Amino acid sequence: MAIFIKTKEEIEKMRVAGRLAKETLDMITPYVEAGISTNELDKLCHDYTINVQKAVPAPLGYKGFPKSICTSVNHQVCHAIPSNKKLKNGDIINIDITTIKDEYHGDTSRMFEIGKTSVKAKRLVKISYECLWVGINSVRPGAYLIKDVGAAIQRYAEAKNCSVVQDYCGHGIGRAFHEEPQVLHYFSPKTEDVMLQPGMTFTIEPMINAGKLAVKLLPDKWTVVTKDHSLSAQWEHTMVVTDTGVEVLTLSDGESQPLGLSSK
Ligand code: MF3
Ligand code: CO
Ligand code: CO
Picture 1 (cartoon, rainbow, N blue to C red):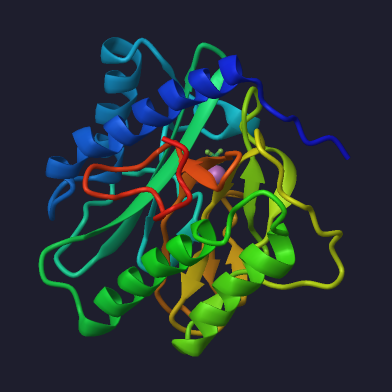
Picture 2: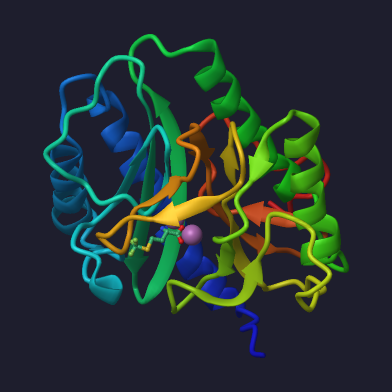
């Protein structure tokens, strides 16, 4: 089991990659409206990453993934492939951006609501965001990924009568898109727990379902959907464990580092 502890120089590169991923989400935000296709969103993000940021969209060609971003709508849980299908009033969509700059990755996703969404959808979007931050707030040196971070997320989601997807998790990140450790968003006694140390870099990206936790993979081999067709929502940040807590590398404007935990 190899978890790479990043040097100061590597963390600086990850700050840059994280900021670029966040900026692509900012760039695309005004376009995320009824009538646009997810292919159009993909092309805008692709061109911005390559031409403006002089960076690389990590998903493109990753294990055969055909596009530059993931666009998961409504009951789609994650990894949905952009298509010619247009967004419509009432949809919720997760846009997941991963950017490579100077060999290092930044990975972040947000939910967007299209037009007027249902009370149920709004509630799920809010709870999934809170689940991400319950996780982030549990990160500090000496804390454990499963019994502290994962368990806290699951406790929060289930107290709100939502379920946590168990088939996909967060991940270490750096020179590789996905590296050790796995970041479970629930408690499991079966997986070996990891004690957090300064310099560890990973994502937290809980997938929260309004219904049951079961998911299935579509025949395209990428798109994950809820089995019961219930809505699913997800938010993701990339972070580094600091000497005193955590620094979120993909923080958006108006979001603040957890109180008393950030190093800068
Ligand atoms: N960005 C996703 C994650 O959070 C992974 C997408 S893999 C892809 O880990 F190939 F579908 F892009
Ligand atoms: Co990720
Ligand atoms: Co991602």
